[in-house]
Image (cartoon, rainbow, N blue to C red; front, side):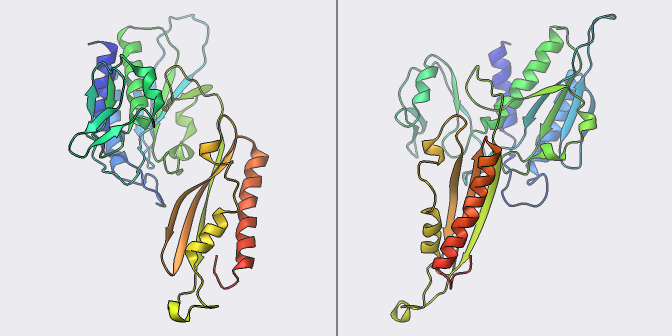
Length: 318
């Protein structure tokens, strides 16, 4: 079996496990499917010959591939490989139905003929980089979960290759963590005594050949707005529309400092979700910045924006 076939086989096997994480949970992991994923990976790692395999109370799976260097070899660093097991929930079906587009020759990709769902080149020009390749897609009714099941498959095939080809290596530690997509971050729940590495690589998404050597500071804000309801016939000077209060807050932010207008290490504030009815509204906001001072400043700006809008709308509860 070729490397591509081995990667594809493992990816499809892992993608079939429903392991979406869930926003707003107070427990780690946030969903039972991540336990299923951890147990499957533990079995696969044991089959490959890894030792010290353990799934913690927080569903963090760790293990070790013992060094195979000859006696007398100079010491080498302990290396770690990390991947997350959860996939993102974007309110589509949790059931993944993968399909393979053989020898992609360009143009829009038809995902689902019945529902007329396409991946359009006009919206995803990165498709042009993969002409001549085989593509794995969904049927359009779910996310594929390649973030991070492709990385999980990558890591497992790398281990398999090292072992089968008896490549010389030092101690290699692996860690599979839950809830990366919802910020609960199983990595925060890791027992690092079981991951004693000098450096580690997180395998996660992005373009072929791309290596990311730094990351952003990340936070979130959840704003609740309580309005005042009134019949429109008698609403003057009484009604407080929480949806409009939410819009006032959003309008405080710089539209050029949002994900669609930034790149590289530029920070942003991302209004990710708005929910509203006649009585109340909520805003979910994500804050990202590589610069720690700017990150803290963005959080403070959100606080000031809320105070400013509260002053303009004294009868609202924000």
